Length: 327
Image (tube, rainbow, N blue to C red; front, side, top):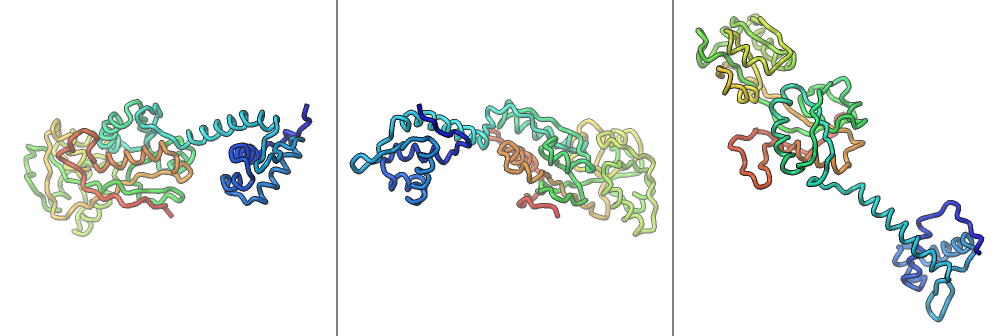
């Protein structure tokens, strides 16, 4: 019985053993392994000491394996095959069969306007996957993305988040709305009329509130805010049931106008758009499943046609440049 040392087995030794058996010469085996002949010869000497066996002896112009080397060949090949399969599996992802749960951080607007489009896309390209929309919290967003508690966050976060990668999905437009049968407002308003009209605002869109306030201050006017609500999706129905006016995302108007009798009212100043990004952490950026999910988020945001399904008549006007790291 051989009294060999099996401590700290090295994969390089197993690869060298198999290469020498297959090639029969140090010259050809070293070429197969991408080593110099001297490096492989040194490795063979080390293996001989470890296994207390010559392992290979010269027979003519070839290196013939000893019985121990022949017995080692099968388990060595098995170990390397298992390792290669396991490593390959780490980078393998099949959308058609995955049952993974993808976690998307969004706010209320994203949940009601964007998530349905993403659900529709995933149902086609990853039918067994699950989607978990979670509330996006700017204060905990970086930690949640770093830990993997959330895979991707989509939304408008004007403050920079250090360490995150971000990619523009599209620019969200806004419109001023009033009820269809408003007694005083028709198709357009002056800023003075807008300032005098009772308004409903939401804390969920602070950028628009700041824009409205700035426009009124320019004209030495004060806004007639009558209501503040946390619920953006309630505003179309509040406007439809009152004389209030509001500035809301165009997506929200298009979603609710079939069931809430409201209309767009033109203002003299163009309402700015805001950038909607998706964010992820670089620690998980190379994960094939998360990479696939980011691609689907982008395609859903751009309203790209689904495989085998005609493109929708309406699509978001957007631009999608390459992602970049936030400073």
